[in-house]
Length: 104
Ligand SMILES: [Zn+2]
Image 1 (cartoon, rainbow, N blue to C red):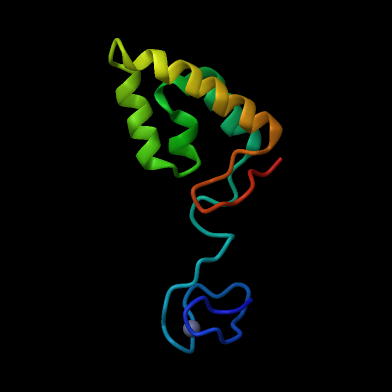
Image 2: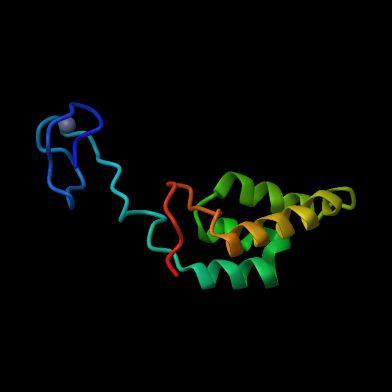
C-alpha cells in the first residue's frame, strides 16, 4: 500500500510510515476485525442503547443513541434507528467507523 501523507510505498502491515513518520490508516487496525454476528446480536438485544455502535467504533452516534433512549421523546427516534441499523447489518451495509466491512 501507499502512504496517505507522502505517497511513498510502505509495507502493508506498517503502522507508521517510515518515510514521513505519519501514522498509517491500516484497515486491520482499530475497529476493523469486528464480527458481523456480534454486531447483529448486540443490535438485536441492546440496539436501543447503541451497543452495536459502541462495538463498531461509532462513539459519537452511540452516545447520542444512548441519550435518546433514556428520554421520552428520544425513544421514538432511537427505536426505528436501531431497527434501520439492524437491517443494515443484515444486508452487509453497516460498516465500522473506519469504513471496514464486518467479518462474517
Ligand atoms: Zn509517508
